[in-house]
Image (cartoon, rainbow, N blue to C red; front, side, top):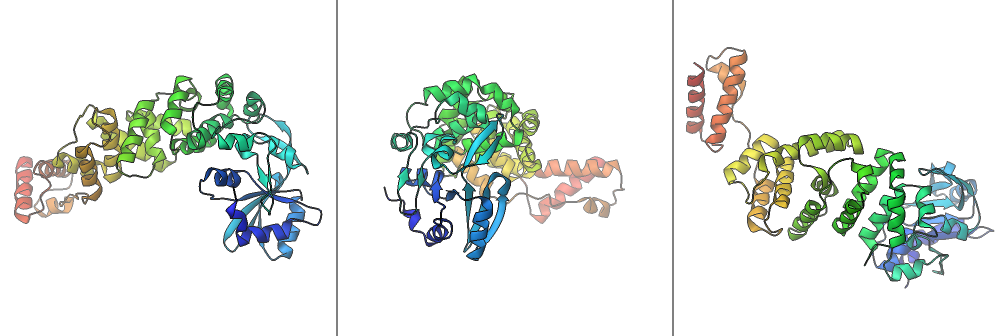
Length: 410
């Protein structure tokens, strides 16, 4: 298969600058894999026999902008007309501890390829499109089979994040059964994930949850106890599958954070646990906690709330939390994923302006109420009357509700 990205003028310029004169440059990894699978190629990475210093000198001589993004690891970024390309000096592992590797620079593309994780990531290509396969990459890509290079347990012990990465790759690119040797290695080495930073786990887990076949893969992982070191709590793969079905039925883009909530959020305490286990940002924790609040009010429903109750959700919890809570509640129900009533309720929440209380403390003060606890209590009563009345905006109705609340106070 022709690697069309090699014809890009920016790619060819990079080859002219860094290839030759005793050095060799090749495209490596994901760009080749995706091109052979017919998937979009988003990034093109390179490996080179030259040291970072030599690459920087050549690139600057060609008046290309360079950024030493990871120069201590042999990686520089070269920008050509707004496109960035990562170029890394060939490396060999010296020592690994399950989280990071100590490496030395090398000149062997074969050694560099065999230190990578999966066979489908081990291919390299020259400017002319000549492919080099030092394992079984081409064969496994053709079979859409995700396999570790060499001994799976040894590969996992080099970096325990490869457990999650393996399942993510299968959820994106794999077909058929999960590779048994890799699955066995993941189970045998799962405790090693405790050594990983929570931030790395969070990033990899969200990538996995965004994958097309995340539901089936996560179900396998749960069955083997592989998510316990990651989540340290409940996991509901069946609800994840339902949310993905609902997304698909409505033509929604994958929402990995919603899928994370579907997997392991039932009550507000779960949001706090996720915050601690996965180092969620404040915004993510707030989203999970607010969704749980809505879900707590909707547990057990088999049909969507009335328009009045949906308006109340919008008013009390906001649009995002209401939409999140509703889809999670539908996923817990027996309603089909394509249920029209739930779809219309979601559209109502999405399109209806969020109600805003048309009263304030100033209105009560203007009617003679004194500052103090009674003022706040009366405003709460007025809000409750307004909600029960169906969120009216007619002046006469609002005047009547105001007088009713004031009468209750006096």
